[in-house]
Each structure stands twice: as C-alpha cells, then as structure tokens.
Length: 249
Image (cartoon, rainbow, N blue to C red; front, side, top):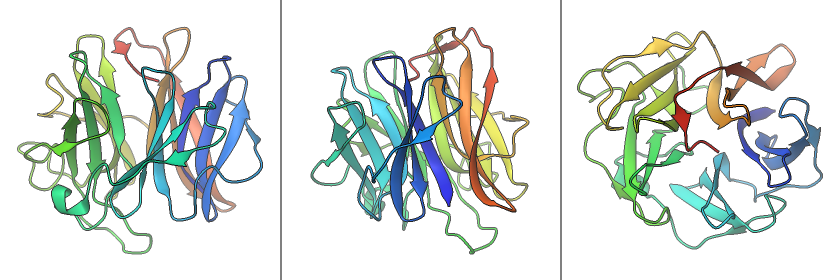
C-alpha cells in the first residue's frame, strides 16, 4: 500500500517524500524529485495518517497529520526523524466533523497561516458527500476554524463532493486548492482571491487523489498524487509551468 504522499525540498537540494506504506509513514529520498529510494524504518508512529510536511521560517519541518483530529510533529534534522508536539492543532468538535483529513497548510502574504481540510473518507464506504473547510492561525500552531464551507455541501457556490485538499498561494495573494471528487474520481482545482470564497472550478486533467504540490527551482510546479492499479497503490506526479505561484514548499 502506498498513499497520501507529501514531499519537501531539503536544504541540500534533494527531495524527501513521506508516504503511508502499509501501516505507518515511511520516507524516500530523491535527487531530482522523480526517482525515489526508500529509507529504512518509519517516520511517525502507527496510526498517523494523511500527513502534510510544511517548512517553518526557522528551517524546521512541521508535519501535520490526521489522528483523532489534526496533530503535528516537528523535525530538526530535515525529516529524518520527528517528535510529536503536544495537544491537537484542530479537534473534530471544532471542525464539526467526525474525522478529519490531513490538511493543506499555506502561509499567506500577511504572515498568517491557513489550513484547508475535509471530513475523512473511509475506504469501502462508497460515494459519500464530503466538504472542505478551513482554519486560521497567527503562529501555525494554534488554530481557529473559519466560518462557513469553502467547497462542497454547505458552500455558497461550489457544492460538489470535495475531499483532501492541498493549497498554494499565488503571487497575487489568491489561494488555489486542489481536491478530489469521489463522484467522478477526478482531481479539480479552484482559486479564490481571499482564500475563502471559491466560485469556479476546473478539472486538472488528472485522476489522482491525495494531492500535494511543490515549486521547483525553475519556477515550475509539480503535483504529487496517489492512485490504485492492478498492482496496488502508487504515487505519480505531474508538472506544469506557471508564473503565478509563490510561497509553496
């Protein structure tokens, strides 16, 4: 089983991928972000799911992950190991959901942070309505849920089933979300100028789930996502050129 990959660039120029493998999160290293070599051992404890790596301003890596809400862990050695932080970053009660996906987190141009998350899809449950909400933070550690629904049931405009979002901040300050829709098994994207009110969407042309996105040194954008074929789970990637992306890992 391979699923829920998240990728971050290391200070030495290499890339480290964290992915759920069978029972817990493992790591893999790459010099080009395309061909990865698995590392030994596990990066986080069993039960940590749908993780997302985020580079802090002080150089440390914070991993947000799903486990009875949203928890986090810190690495001071470029993701070679993690130490869980105390408490929950976000509770299911505050979010109004029974279980949460690991979130997409971005730093906005005003220096604050925003977290996008959905209710958790359960394997084998079939097609079920999912929706995306958000939370805000001044320090990336203590979060307050924003009012309303961003995309999905309860949203003002875009009400289609939407789950497991990842986000990036464009150079003009707008926020683009990538998210999966279980009714047609496609990956969509939508952009909001304020990061809160999303009014139009397009299909990315990809049928991947669990997206994560990074910016490469030449300014192009690479998206990683998961899928399933006859051999089991896999992690794939896609790349596009853009002149309008900033503040992505």
